[in-house]
Image 1 (cartoon, rainbow, N blue to C red):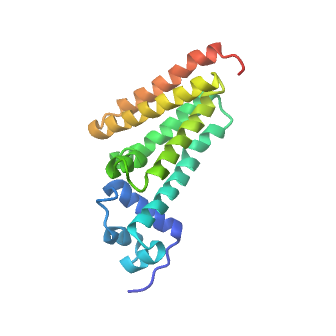
Image 2: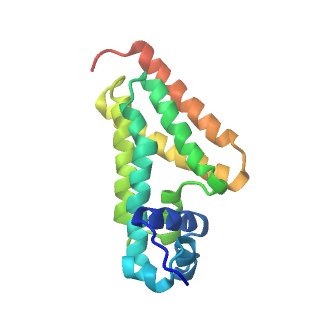
Image 3: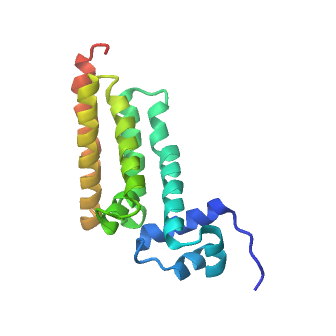
Length: 192
């Protein structure tokens, strides 16, 4: 069999697809290797173990999420448009094969004491900080932190309900409520 050169980023992207669809426990090294076009030995040469591969995939997925979703917070748009665009992009990711949120799925699958929880916790904290920063442009900082936390909970709940039912109204309703909840703050906003 000829040797196929595959870039590390491509390996991570392909493994992410499999792990997103199958979960950590459902994805075997054989499945992951096949998805990358490498043999098991070739894949393990790059990552040494399934656990180190998963950590690399999590880092890769977080980077992709930053670029696709969180970067919207820096765009030159009104705050409500940035929030809506971020949530809609995150919803598009959740709709991939109706798999929901890769990060929440991993946290739920792996449990409370899992080896990936520090990475997952950092991811959710970063999400909250970015959203809190948006909210802080129209409300006091303490209120912004609370609003961001509540939105994270509602968003993950909406994604879970969508995943279970297939009804996109869970996602759409969450976006509409988030943007509408910002509107009263915008009308009465004083510089903070």
